[in-house]
View 1 (tube, rainbow, N blue to C red):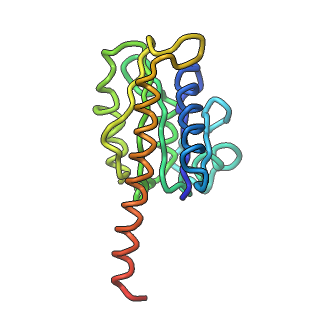
View 2: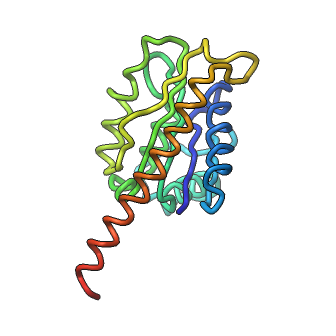
Length: 188
């Protein structure tokens, strides 16, 4: 199983801090799995212009191809101005409509205010559902007060991230087993 962590912003450190912990914990708990962290701040991703995702080159092709090859994706996103960042939305625009079919997607959200806790429900989940993702229903919401000097300081956040990892892996394994059983019914 291949799991990709996607840190969906070019600015700020909180989402990357949370995603670093997520990937570290994932590696410790599931060392047999292939995993990769894509931080959009480290890539020069072109704006979507409607082409097929395979027609892009360079960083853009690498990012979208890595996401398309994943079995599960953990999306980390900050909330800016009560919305997801344009860099993350651009990645969704680069991908085909069915990009997340047969993939499990979970979410980790960082925000400066508790007022933004519904952005994942109102913006991110509808996009992921439209793109056919199997969505882990609970997500991790981390506030500004949970960080100090680029470190997570709230033990409950660590617990919630670990639970998100477990839910992502279990749902992915379960979905794969169901999918394989259905495929086996065809007998060819």
